[in-house]
Image (cartoon, rainbow, N blue to C red; front, side, top):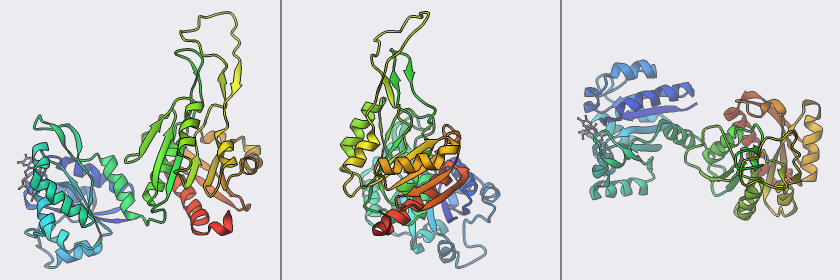
Length: 392
Ligand SMILES: Cc1cc2nc3c(=O)[nH]c(=O)nc-3n(C[C@H](O)[C@H](O)[C@H](O)COP(=O)(O)O)c2cc1C
């Protein structure tokens, strides 16, 4: 995993940097922390040393070349929280402490997550500095809107740890999908019987959301059309919400010409009630529902496929895992299909097989869904984007 140099400056949001170090280490990244001198008034370096498992630096006490050696060691340099003061110094090329001097000598990706009072952040001098930084290729993770400690409302809260972690993963990966557009459908659709009852399924959306994250990390422009989901939404991705299969079809068909790759991961309701009651159905001795077939979105996409890459998911009983998925691959004119057993639905874990049009199979060994999504995405990138002529 990555070697991350975390610069910490003196914003009141500094306590969130502790959580960030912890979460980075949980994801198996190596972390070294460098503090601005004033930051030590907020939190001692001992806390960061304990959390990172590495020595934390404030100045050059051990090594006169620390400002060169720390950035050289790192794959990624993040300053979070980045005070308005440190942000401006980095923008202007001022190196008056170890942290700002490291920013001067760093040559790789630099990511700044500013935090501060909304009026300070809006200040034209600061906006000008932000513009300079962006122009130089510095990644700015914008502060969020909300109420701040100073009781003011506005943009100034440090980006959530979740968003920062997502940008870390983004920054550490190569970008083979830069310029490619990926549409992913996620979650369960709902078909209403009356105002309060519906037909649906167990899909949590976790696999689809994980795939969306991973495709973004590899550089794709990702859009998600999602039905009902119970798992956390991926940060930094546009999510279009729908309820029924017909609504999902409408959105997907509307975006099909935009996309280079469509991954249909959602579990759509194949049937809907012939009639939806406007109120709440009263309890009777027996109720018979007539169901009618919903449109088959994947089949429709397969018929007008053109140059697009089309990937489906097939949820099958164990005995029919491969035969069912292969049938779907052929009948729906797909480039690849992911076959997964019933147990994977609604679970945090995933196991399955990825099958390509040319008959090649790849095992997706049991793992959490984010790791499984990484595996599925890397096979798809390798086979369908790098060598399309061979596999499509
Ligand atoms: C309690 C407290 C909270 C502060 N919070 C912020 C903040 O959120 N953002 C900011 O830009 N400055 C904040 N400041 C001001 C900075 O600490 C000050 O500008 C300092 O000189 C920044 O130094 P540094 O960038 O070297 O860490 C705060 C100061 C204090 C005393």
